[in-house]
Length: 442
Image (spheres, rainbow, N blue to C red):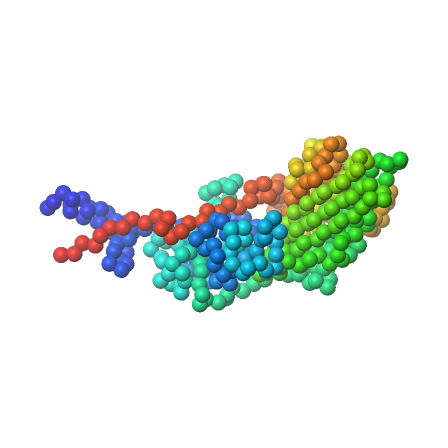
């Protein structure tokens, strides 16, 4: 027998023994087996931009769907949405209805599945275009932890994915999910009322602001001096995966000598609230001594435990002063209450200057005082020194169930998630690992 045929028969015999050969459409495919889902970061979104899936650019957004593989068979559609982004990076309710390079395709990591075996072809399973993508998602902190989804285009499919992870009630300015309810106030550009995990206990007094300026004396401006431009946030989109909101503030002080502009985009998911705030201060030569942003909890939060990087053992929120170090700056804080836990992480590096932790747990009012008298576990950041007059703050709040006997202080873990968001790689079908061998006939 010719050496070439001997070699080929040996290869085929070995493949057959390993159970890797399947005959499809006149060819034998030796394929990589399905890989199980190992990614365990389930609270975060997966965001794929149009530029990542360039072959689908200009596709009608209503023709895009995301599927998963269960490890045994092709699963159903998972909730997804396409958020259109205009030049300059602003989100819009409707642009042209087609996928552009800066548009965002969004779905949840919790819904991801296993990797399709190379022997499975979606085009023979679904009525879809021949152009589709495998979206590989991995944890940058542990790259071996992965999961997959499949982005397809079809003019004949309809959306069958069930679920709406977060919703928005415009009359009440209320974001609602199964894990939290948060309400915006009409009096300032911040939040008031926060309930966790479907309970009725409001643990938040309000978000606060203090701006201290020197101008023939010292003046302190608060969040009440910064009413929102419109009482209600602008709803950009309430989709099945996330709510997108915009809120803007423009205000001047001291007869226009000092002005502030604050534009915040919010993304509300099932267990996560993200905010990107663009801040611009015009001081006209007037000295701004400090700016403080903070979360002040309600007296109903008494008994909760406060943690940050400098306070790993925690202190009890009870309106009685505690010692929490101002430095070094902690990028996160956590409040653990019987109704649940919240962890806020903030990236304030773009502000520059000197930044320190702020913490006040004191039922006695401060001066000036806003909201409920006094402070209960009020936590935030104080900016001073030569900080920038224009900068961007990015923050995330994770909402968790009560500790339930597990590790309570988990803020550092979620700070790692914040600093290292889930990463994606988009593959077109030809990129899948396949080895093709001819069928031998007599």
